[in-house]
Image 1 (tube, one colour):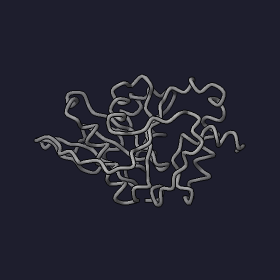
Image 2: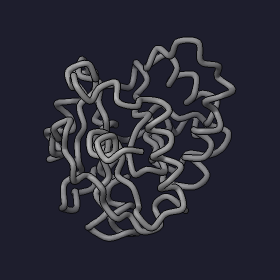
Image 3: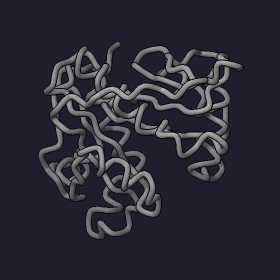
Image 4: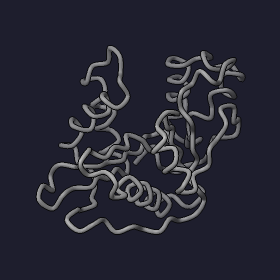
Length: 209
């Protein structure tokens, strides 16, 4: 990769510089995006947020709900919803399930369940190998109860307790998703400019759990 490519696209990833995934992720950046946004930042339709360097207060889930880890059995339903949320074009479910499965089995990923059906999540949040939180979703009929906020705070606190306060994960939120944009801002996450050239953070072990 050229120096300009790394500088312009480094903001996309919060990478453990000691991780064996470093070269792999950068190659992925080059293959998937290259320099297509380097000259016209407005073409990229997501905003990036960096987690606050402070520990969030936990929020108790409402009565009738349970907060717990996601399991391998949840990967398929999460992938299906991911496809619907992002509106992937010409992407097969089978190519995305391994990504979700890798997140669930190797990193802190959490869901919220009803006590009446504790095997099926009604809300969830995952962590990618590069240090990004994503796949945030709350099913209709359960919205307006603060579940997204609960998941964001709980996941961030678990990561901080495991890897230290210097481990600041990030999130990419679609610009038109006003609810999520306002949520992350209200939680103290910092909006980052596209051409931020100092977005590499050391996340010991986050990529290799």
